[in-house]
Length: 127
Image (spheres, rainbow, N blue to C red):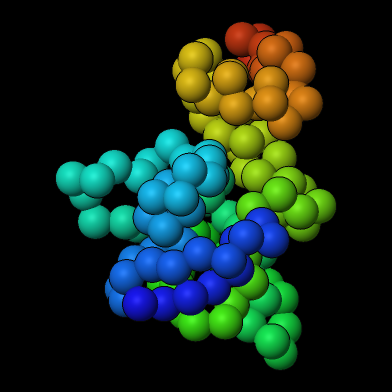
C-alpha cells in the first residue's frame, strides 16, 4: 500500500495507481475529458492537472499519468492548477466551442459562454 496526502486528507492506494485513479476511488473529483477506463492514459486534454509536492519541490503534474508515491502531497484546487486548467480550457474552446461538456467545464472556471464570439466567419484581412 502507498500512503500519501490529497487535499489535506491522508489516503492509501495500490502500487501502480495514478493520482487520478486514487482520487476517484476516494471520492475526489478531478476534471478530465480524455480519460476512459478502457483506454491507456495519454494525457491529451491536460485538464486533470494537480499540484504535487514531494518534499523537495512542488510542481504541476498530469494526474492520469502520474503514479502515487509514499509521502507525496497532492492538491487538486490551487491557484497554479486553476490557471493551467483555465488556459487549457481556452485552447480547447478554440477547437470545439460548441461541445456541451467543454462549456460546462468552462462555466465552472469562470469562462463566459460567449468566449468564441470573436471567431468570425469573415476572412481575415491578413491572409
